Image (cartoon, rainbow, N blue to C red; front, side, top):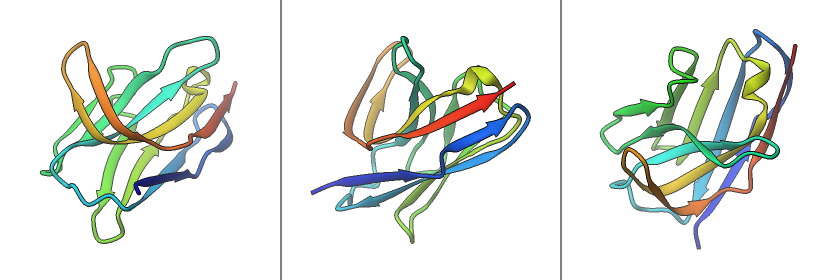
Length: 121
């Protein structure tokens, strides 16, 4: 059984930093990308960043240059380093595994339960 458990969320002031972690268990596939999504109140879930098995990364335009996705395969853990946070980054952040995506679509095999990030101005 695959489990993804996020941690590291919290409340920070604008300009601050947070690092989210996602501990994966029961997940053995390293061929499909993993990623982070977020959902703000009243809005749809949006992609934030993906990383594939070769370490190649993609980011949403809104977070480029501020967020960094990485993974430690020895620890089965995915990370999202978030710097220069803005109030508009406030959302529930979700870890995702077994991800397929294209320009305007995505499919996720497994979701974490989410961790809240709140950025105050």
